[in-house]
Image 1 (cartoon, rainbow, N blue to C red):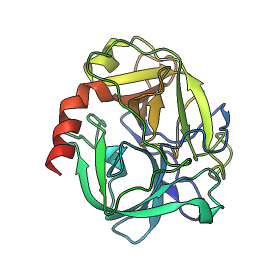
Image 2 (tube, one colour; image 1 turned 30 degrees about the vertical axis):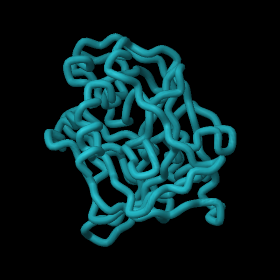
Image 3 (cartoon, rainbow, N blue to C red; image 1 turned 135 degrees about the horizontal axis):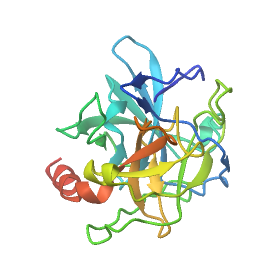
Image 4 (cartoon, rainbow, N blue to C red; image 1 turned 120 degrees about the horizontal axis):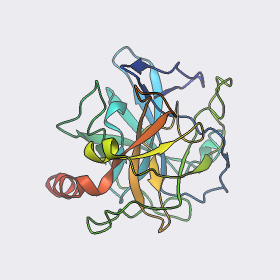
Length: 243
């Protein structure tokens, strides 16, 4: 879910047992600029409010995020670690948006979107793209992590000033696999404020996009869901090529 620019976090939106995600719960501060691909996405909504999502840099022209982060206009913030250090940050407008054509806003299927920047990102020590896995790397990854500037616990209504990160363990869930998702279970992981950020695994590639939470009807632990990037490889390639 988005974060208000005034640093107030929106309450989680529950739809049919699902919750938009965005907070790093149970994590720790990331080393400064250790994730130079991370994007803080500033959006302006139709009602004039300003909100934020996460995202990640694919190359000098494109950012990937979640489709549910759609808005009227966007500004990509690159090179962010501490959100108060504005002099270190590149601000680039978004020229074109490409939410997946089959994105479903009710159940968050195909929750993936590409953003084409209006000008090229300036690569430097603090701004670098992240690689994506090939379709051949479709087995369940091990040792993954997520990161973002969202809330750090359930009682704190403010976003984190610095980038936070946490390790997550993916589960072999048949329902998730059927819906082109990777999933992790438990209280530790992303939540309110980190939507659109990357699921980064042991080879330092982005395997997923932070999407939503799901509470099984049968009970059990809450499940965090990430759009499975390898299932969208062809769409990603064709979209960037045509743009």
